[in-house]
Image (cartoon, rainbow, N blue to C red):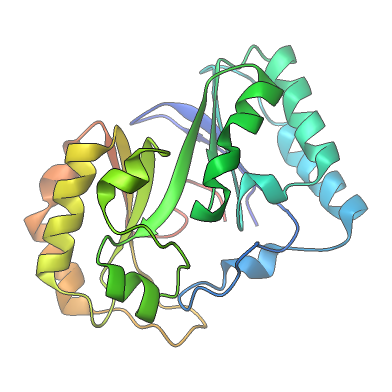
Length: 228
């Protein structure tokens, strides 16, 4: 498991994959990522500290991801991150958060004292597919609602049952309402949700231009950020 990486093309930054307590929701039908969660706080703090030791501060930007939301990281790990921010002169943090925590986003900004960009896993703006198929438990109905809280979103493409129209709408709304986005091409895992190979081929041809878009990162493999 790689827990530290440097991203040197778009949006240069360092990134760490940390361990946290169980996801507050943890019922998304497509996700087996939560198996990285834990309950042994001392062990998680120790493993997280090892990853954080790798940070150099060379870009002034640090992204912290975990199998859930940043609010589920151990308190001691948050203290360690804050120490790294100060010692390595980090100017901006990037965290992940579930929609459930949308009213708490300011807490991390106050705690760290620097700008924090939050990513939210939207997966799709198609409400029925998001809630009835993917079971995201994110009850916003429009992209404008999500944009009230989040500057950056993650979309998922290439799932059986998804349509080209859904993807077209999702990409259009990403570009219209958000400053930054990540598009994850779905890869089969241990869940019942399956990849649609034809839809993936169409997306990679139709939206090849996203590869050159400075505000959108396309992850064809789940390890494309160098962690995982």
